[in-house]
Amino acid sequence: MGPSAKALRSPKLQALSQDHLAKDLRQALPAAKLRPAAERPSPADTLGVALLRDGLIAPDEMVRALALHARRSGRLTDILVSRDLIGPDELCVALARHWKTEVIHPMAAKPDIRLIDRIGGNFCLRNSLLPWRQTGAVTVIATAQPEEFERHRAKLTEVFGPVAMAIAPAQEIEQTILAYRGKSLARAAETRVCAAESCRNLAGRRLFVPLFLLGLILSVLAVLSPMTLVWGVVGWAVVTLALSTALKIAAGFASTLRRAPSGPAPVLARLPVVSIMVALYRESDIAPRLIRRLGRLEYPRELLDIVLVVEAEDHMTRAALAATDLPPWMRIVVVPDGQVKTKPRALNFALDHCRGSIVGVYDAEDAPEPDQITRVVHRFAERGPDVACLQGVLDFYNPTTNWLSRCFCIEYATWFRLILPGLQRLGLPIPLGGTTLFFRRAVLEELGGWDAHNVTEDADLGMRLYRHGYRTELIETVTGEEANCRALPWVKQRSRWLKGYMMTWATHMRDPVVLWRQLGAWQFAGFQVLFLCTLSQFLLLPVLWSFWITAFGFHHPIASALPHWAAFGLIALFVLTEGVNITLGLIGLRLSGHRFSRLWVPLMHFYFSLGALASYKAAWEMVYRPFYWDKTDHGHFDPP
Image 1 (cartoon, rainbow, N blue to C red):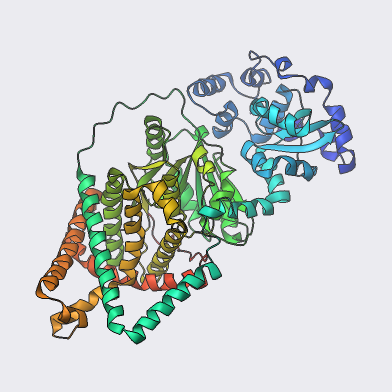
Image 2: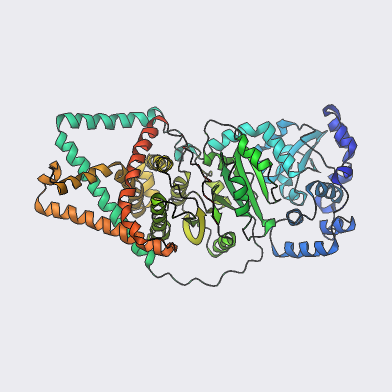
């Protein structure tokens, strides 16, 4: 490397007091530096040539870096930093020399925060720009990406008038914006989705009143005509069971249909930058392992932007990350405190920090396949702009820990390898899975990101994508996760998922007519079966199980009153449902490649009894703690 960046910095600039910064900077930025773009360094006088001329990069290293830059998107500076060919501080000084301007350090020299407000903190974060000071009629704009400054000049001039460019480290620009406007940006992350499509206004009286009326009607029926209530509840349980089973059969059959052969993989002139967000909360012990797993990804490092998102109050995780030697392509984003503390809020806040045109999401315990990002990039290139999201396959790296982990593995194998692909083939909206998700960034921003108040933000976003005319596709790449194989944590996790399903159904059903028009009749019906019937099955599982008492000679008020044909039909439905569940479980387990005994599959019948307990916890929290995020602990098992 070349001389120390610290030695190259202007000592005078570092020593300036706040009162004299504007005056001195005006003297440090002569008129030559404010000249039009056409008079700036010519294309022949590239940054690479300048770095070679200054002796900061070895010629052979620069040749390789320029060859990579010619084949890939992104910036030359990212290639140089990601390959540790030059330090960030040295690069800033070299950029300032090349663009004939100065380096400023906004954390040491306070900016005029009113300028940030004039253009918006989100815009500044997204483009690594910081309106720093006004020097007379000129506004000095600090940037970490001078090669892209001209692209923003028209907007900057519209807002500020004449502008001049200065150089600042990207990390300091980000830290400065967050230091002065972090709280307002965090509040904006909570309301990024429009009110009409968010669940944030469902709490309190809006939710309590209809639930109270429903409870009142059921209570009156229980007193005046208890058998009417019993028949109604049992009838609804049976109908929803039949509809859920029919959807499973259709999805399972559709997923096995022969697919049309895909054409040759497209040849991409340049690979895009891909940002991956990982939300961490109380994950101090898992953070180093996560970094090791993500380090196995084979995508070019200069095009990989890993954003580790942590809460401001989570000092343990922040300390663990600070003690870890992060590679240049990984960085930390700290989310300021807010009214809610949820994963979607953290993702919304971090979205503006991402620099990729494709944005992905992983969980803290994930172990993705090494070629996963490459597959995603090529699939997006193959598909049209209506395919806005790709969902990978989730599986477990500890499937044989105990009975619960085996059942969890069978459930996921069925869901991700049969049901979701079947829903896609049937043209139904797909509830997303929370991780191994990849989005076209432009669409994600168009929809307002995630609903910060929804505790299953993934399922909700899947529905909103479909309502706005976009599609989700399944992609055959696997991410290993840690199976939640302890009973109480499993119930807590599943209760959060079921509460989120309740939220999602209630949110989208606020105006059923609009939902019908946006989805269409077939998709509207699929939405009801996916959400309403699923919730009903968990909540009413004891009602269906009550028919078992007849096998032991006990009286059942409904079973005894049914005509023979109806009783036979009910038994046939129960047998069919169990047969479908076992068949799909066996097929899914075979597709997953796990080798433990298939005799575990019939025991899934008892596994879902835990889901009934979780549904009652979810229903209680839906009324009293709708936005509470029941955290799932990870890090008890590690993949090989």
